[in-house]
Amino acid sequence: MEELKRYKTRMRFTKTGSVRFLGHLDLMRFFQKAVRRANLRVSYSKGFSPHQLMSFASPLSVGATTDGDYIDIEFEPDEAEPDVLMERLNSCLTDEIFITAAERMPDGFKNSMSELKYAAYMITDKFDPGSRTSYTDISDSLTGGKKGFPDDHRNVFDSFAARESIPFIKKTKKSEREIDLKPAIITYAYELSDFEKKLGEKLPELHPVYTGESIFLKLPASSDNTVKPEQIMDAFFAYASFDPAPYGYQIHRLQMWF
Image (cartoon, rainbow, N blue to C red; front, top):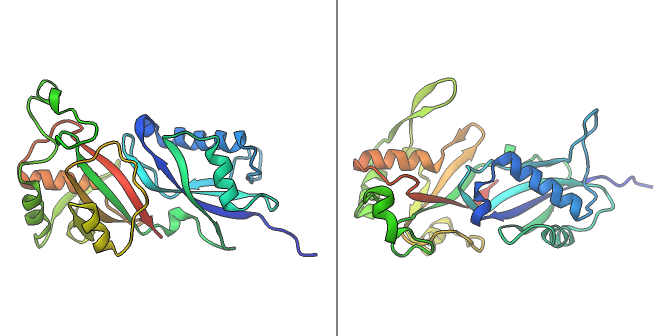
């Protein structure tokens, strides 16, 4: 009789609202506790201090939100199918963190972190009057009249993205080096519908904290070539000679591709 094997799942989840301020380690603990509360037969590592076999595709910056992040979880052979797992896990999650898709992965697949290639983002001006949660009425007292995006930001960003090269100093804990951000802007748009047309696919249902004037970006996200939306925005603001309001824009991750 063939021995049943553990199986792995890849689940897409949403993180929005106030829990966007949870750090990566706290988010992992949150999911670990939810798995236990749901009485799911999760697999554990071997050794002196076993832990749940769980990993994320890419850590999300504190304060950012997402509808397109992924978590890999390994389960024991007799556990339920992914759609049942998703329902049971969601019953122990919240209306700000929840699973939106789940699939069983084939034997021998690599985890999502090693397979990740690209990610898409929506960067929204928090001080845009059309924002769902807007600080417009009190922005002068908070920021001295500063805004999240420069005036006529679409034309300015078009000019910025059209440059032959976009030099940027990438800093790490150990060093800093100049990189060219130009190849990293795979595609961009200012409206979700236009962005989806350029991507050639429909994005998941979105649950952003902010709506309004936005810049949509598809960027590389592999282990050896990752460009963050913050880096693009810093370079854009420098090009525009613009001093944005502190925390003047919101990053919302839309999707990942493997």
